[in-house]
Amino acid sequence: MTRDEIAQRLERSGVLPTTQRLDVGEVILSSPQHASADQIIARIRASGSKVSKATVYNTLKLFCERGLLRTVHVDPTRQYYDPTIEPHHHFYNVDSGELTDMQIDAITLQVNTALPQGTEHAGVDVVIRVRDLRD
Amino acid sequence: MTRDEIAQRLERSGVLPTTQRLDVGEVILSSPQHASADQIIARIRASGSKVSKATVYNTLKLFCERGLLRTVHVDPTRQYYDPTIEPHHHFYNVDSGELTDMQIDAITLQVNTALPQGTEHAGVDVVIRVRDLRD
DNA sequence: TTAATTGCAAACATTTTGCAGGTTC
DNA sequence: GAACCTGCAAAATGTTTGCAATTAA
Image 1 (tube, rainbow over the protein chains, first blue to last red):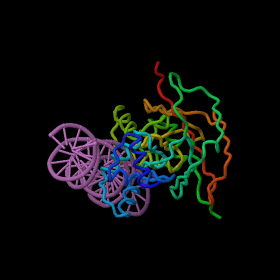
Image 2: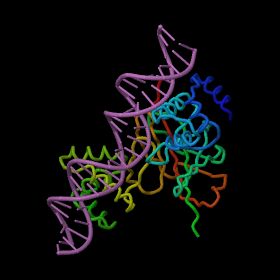
Image 3: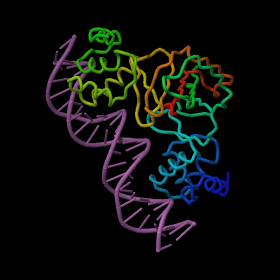
Image 4: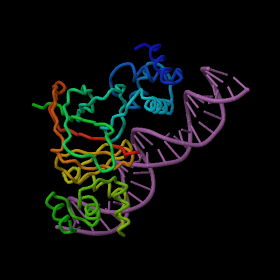
């Protein structure tokens, strides 16, 4: 995804496409992947651009609010950001911390129980934990 | 579960049942529930006992290592501790933050895809997100 | 020129760690 | 008395916020 295409996407979501927001978008919106805020900051800086931590956090929050990003909670110490907003599931490698997408239809899930009193369904997260094969 | 029974459980797991560890155990091991470290500290202090944060965190970590507790990651800002160590799943109320256990057989799950290269299965977490009914 | 955005530093919250003093076997 | 446990305070994250300077409409 080019910078221009990202700019258009931001505008369509009512987000002013500033330099820093395009920097963030280029890193995390361009391709299906997962990254923490720290990794995103590092990649932006590695590419020569300068951004502050605060701006990256603010931008990630904004992207989430506008539905451009989701967060994934598998690691107790940090959040991961995921540009794939369609419903899907994850593999989580507990050894490497690596997150991998799984298509929604890779999981057949049947729920044989009622939801808690006074609640309605809001989504399902399935995380299949895997570990490195050791022989 | 009485304090004595908790003491026995700790000993069976090779954990010396000190006063503070029994305090922690009484709060989080006595009944199926979920609590954050902060909530556990608050409950111990509300019952009149004194403990330091460090000791509670150390104790929770120890309990996890010894298989007496698990952590659940649904809230990006804190860990929840869960005394139910048998495999099971959770409802997570996104409005209230409330976590509810779901029996393992309440979910029928079929995986129609291969695990990532070089990995083996290590477990599955299913979280059904629910929200408060609004009429 | 008015509103929105950035970035620094400081604030925050959760969790971990170093270490002196206390407890337990 | 040797090993283990506790608790304080300080450090180490990850994330948010206040605010002055900057940029964009």
